[in-house]
Image (cartoon, rainbow, N blue to C red; front, side, top):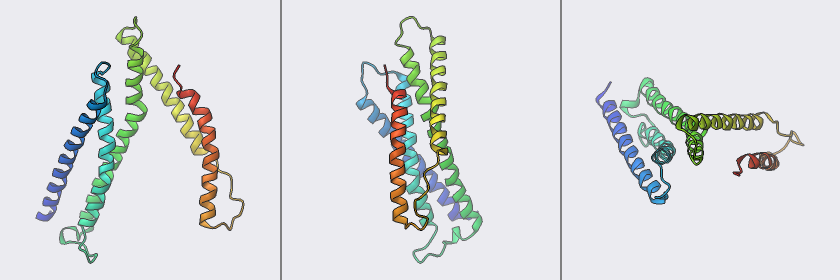
Length: 201
């Protein structure tokens, strides 16, 4: 490993750490500013801060990815000495790819499990005669129900076929128009079926 590669890794890790700390500080200030002081809970605050931070860190990974790709090359398009080997480039690309996989997996975990569980846990706490064990059980039960409904809706959306194009020799613009028309009609289906599920009593 060359000295330039080690320097690049050190810079990348340092920038990532600094960006992560700045994002966490921003999320903490943002959530605390708009949070109700009377109804704030520690777990819900931590959940909101972490979920927002994960989303922002994932968004920040794209410019880092673009920077790394451009940093490997000179302005004339040739690779720099440290990035001349395919192995070094592949290693850098794999690191960014694993970062994407990790962050998107954490987002899926937050959206489908962690946030619904915390929401249902504190909704159950409003009942006066509920102990902690029953509260956790009910929150888990509702979270699993939420997960089943989401999985069913996503599967329906993935496997319901779109209508075929009326003309096989369509231009790209006509194909895009047809796609938007199809999505508009399927949106009515989802709004009709999803909105009764998400309405609170």
